[in-house]
Amino acid sequence: MQRLNWHKANMRVLHFAPEGIFKRLFESFKDIDYWPVDLNLGNLRKAVDITNITFPNESFDLIMCTHVLEHVLDDRKAMSECYRVLKTGGIALLNVPIFYIPTTFENPEYNTPELRLKYYGQADHVRAYGLDYPQRLIESGFNVELVTLKDFNEKLLTRYGVNKNEKIFLCRKGVI
Picture 1 (cartoon, rainbow, N blue to C red):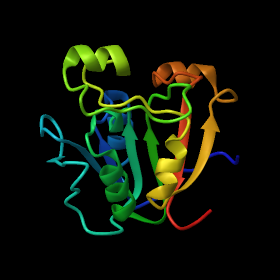
Picture 2: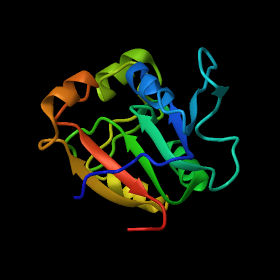
Picture 3: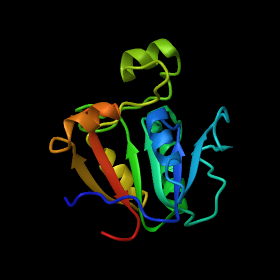
């Protein structure tokens, strides 16, 4: 994989549940139209439901959504909404924790914090993503590339709180 050159002047970035360190990074670029959003407004630019994104089609060059979809009841709707608002040629980073199981495990009957903790590993998760996760992204329209971080600068990974074993799903719209 070639190094990801994500920054360009006048780009629009949509960032769900923004991590502080990345929020500060994006806000430091004066030539980026940065939209940190979440379901609850808090200290963000706008309250946005990822299953009903209130922006027009093809609005963003980059979407970041890290460890959010495992909390969303209708993750496939959320994925399709991200695809809809991503510009052709744009990039979406839609990362989730991956369990090394063949298929994603979810059961709507596991609707208590205790059952979710038992089956999904966290009380507020609604599924455990399996090795079929990239296929879910593809079904939403994305071209998906798996990026590993083993060759990335260890110091930078530590600075940004990124686990070097994390799998990054680089999703593109319309262009491979």
